[in-house]
Image (spheres, rainbow, N blue to C red):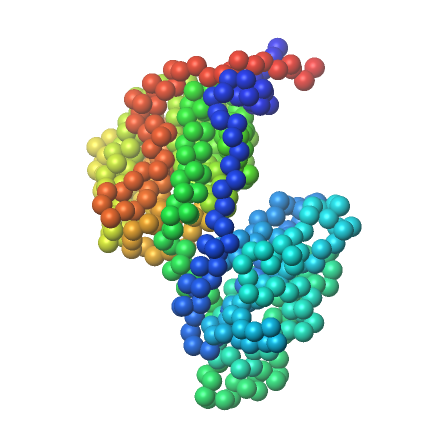
Length: 477
C-alpha cells in the first residue's frame, strides 16, 4: 500500500508553477524604526528615560533552543533581531564628548567561535548602519551602567521571570535585566526618592506602545496584507487538495509549506487544525487525529511575514460536501460574520461587532432548536469576535475602531458531544475568521481571496490539485 504525503510539495509546486518561486525581501527599513522611536519619545513624560529588552533565548531541550523570536516592541522600535540587547530612549537630548544623543542601543559583541556555531552577529558595525544615535556593547550596560538619578520617570517593559538563559556568559539577558533592577533598587537611587521636586515614577511602557502599534503605517499594512494573502492562498490550496485519507497534521503541513514557498519564515501562532470533535476545542493545537473523513475540519492558521502575522480561519467539509446539519450551522456563522464585518467602521467598538454577531447566532440557534433562549447562546459561542493583529496575533490596541487598524472578525459555533441538544448537531464546530482593514469608509476584507460561503467552498473543492499527484512509498513495512 502507498499513501499520500505532503513531503512531495517541493517537487510538485516547483514543476507546476502554481506558486511563484519569487522570494521577497521586504523590510520596514531603519527610517521606519527611527520614526517610531521618535513617536514613542513624544509620548514620554517629562524628564524620563525608557528601557527595552530583547526577548530571551528559550531552551527547547538539553542543548537545543527554540527558534529565536524577537520581542515585538523591541523589533518595532529597532528592527533588531538578535538577542542579549537593550534599547534606551531618553525624553530629552543628552550630551557627551561626541555631541548630543537621545537613544542608545546596546548589542552583542562579535564572536568568531560562536558565530561558527550559531550564525553571524551584526555587532557594533551592523548596528551603526541602522540609524541609531549611539551604539555600545552590552558589556557597557552592565559594567558602566546608565546613571538615572537625575530622571524623574523610568519607563520599562515588564521584567520577564522566565528568563533562564544562563549559557551565554555574564553579559546575557538574565544579567542585563538584573543589572537594571539593581539600578532602580539601589540605595543611592532610593535615597533620592525623598526629593519631592522629582517625584520619581517607575512605570510600564505598555500604554504608549499600545497607542503606537494599534494603527498601522502604510508599510505595515503592505506587510500585513502580504501575510494575509499568503495565508488565504494556503486555505485555497488545501480546499482543492483535501481528501478523507489525509490527517490533521498533513493538512497543517500543506498550509505551512505554502507559507514558506512565499517567503514567510514562520507561523504567527500555533496552527489549529481540528476535525470533528476537535473542531469544538477553541485552541486545539496537537493536530494529531488521523481519521478526518466525512467531518468538518476547522483550520485556524496564519503566516508571519517579516514579523507581521495574519489570522485566517476556514471550516470546510473534508469530503467536499456539507451535510444538512453542517450547512445549517456553517451558513448561520457566515451570515453572522457578514453582518458583523459591516459594523467594523470608524467609531464603532468591538462590542458593536460582537453584539451584531451574537444576535444573529442567538436567533439562528433558537430557530434550529439548539437553544430555547438567547441567553443560552454563549454556551456555543463562548469567545469574543475581534482583536487587533500586527506584530502579535493579538496585537495591543483600543477597542474603539480608528482608521488603519487591522482587526479580525471571527464568529463561531461549537457544539461538542453530549451537548444539551439533538445529537445530530454534536461535534460540529465552525469558525470563520477574516482580517479587516478599517478605512474612512467601508471595511476592507484583506483575506477575502479564500472562499467563505458554503456554495463557493463546495465549488472550489471540486477542482483538481497537483498535491494529489504524487504517491510515496509505504515505510511501515
